[in-house]
Length: 166
Image (cartoon, rainbow, N blue to C red; front, side):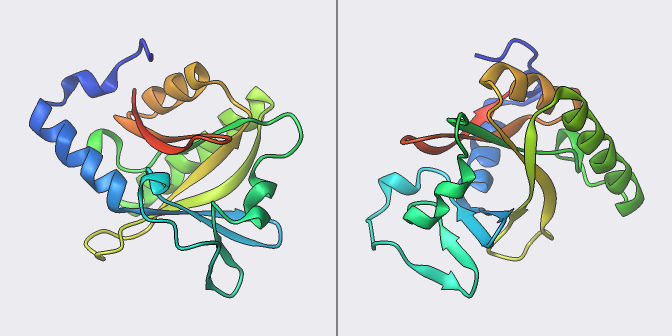
């Protein structure tokens, strides 16, 4: 469990709403050879088999998506630095925060792929982030909290993706 808790500021009602937003979003990970689309708890949805969403986009349950987990990486976290505390910020603020996130992840030595959270209803624009490969849950929690994020997407090999509050 994460000890630095930016999400403690959230009411139970807000946490439920935020969790639903995370669960209905699609997370695009820009991997070599094509994008991987990830959804929260996709394993609980009826399995339609591996399918190509559109050219170069594969669902995370497709064997070709195994490139998300290179040798030695059994986990990944999708973290953003945009709109801390779920409050809309100017594009320049978000761009600077995203740049700081990249620098911090590079300094930690973790490999990463660019990613984006996409609201399929179109109510909010895609939010850029990073898919950090092979990091621990603790590291991801600390990183997300440091950028004012109440939650992030946690992915483990064989377990699918879930919302993790910080």
